[in-house]
Image (cartoon, helix red, strand yellow):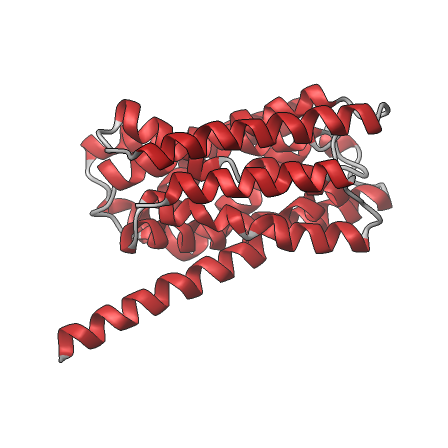
Length: 295
């Protein structure tokens, strides 16, 4: 009876984590957009990492001693693929494409998780999952090409950066599941951002950011990135790593099914709209992701 109750609690917990992450990460795209009002992509990415790192070191510094020396290489790899590279890729992409489109393309992460898992991490696959990969790619092309046709003022080549970021996320989740499952989510998160803190500070210093802090617009953008760094990156990473450990890589990354829904409503508030063909492309992507996640 106790085992049955424990299993039920675990199932409910993973769904609570999934929905909570969707709300947090779905709101991240509009925060990036507001941050870019007065910050460069390099400044935004660096500040996002710095704020998250400071927060995590405050609450999790003592956990660093629990990381075995042999696992620091995986901590470094997951920090690179899970946050460092994507933080800058999303910032550059959203200078040229809408936050709604960016969130939809990010939903390719479970599909990429499956592909990389099969190729490099020993995951098995079914025929329906292969169809899901193909369908997801078709939906992505439709979304990007139609967006480029209807929004000539936006450079949709930058959508490729979001797809690369989704590959980075997929690499990250497979690495965590295979090599870091024995560490607590707080330990992994704190280790990740400890590794990234110094490079982020160097990048921020080289952008001339500290010469602009007197500007009101810059301070407003920094406030949005503070929220993004602490809640959308620091706290969200802890929840995500826990979700990976209590479920599977593909289930954990299926949070990206829900992220576009949250981001879409934020986009509506901010006067962003999709064309009917882009809606179709988004729907096709989600079908592909659903098929790729089926067991």
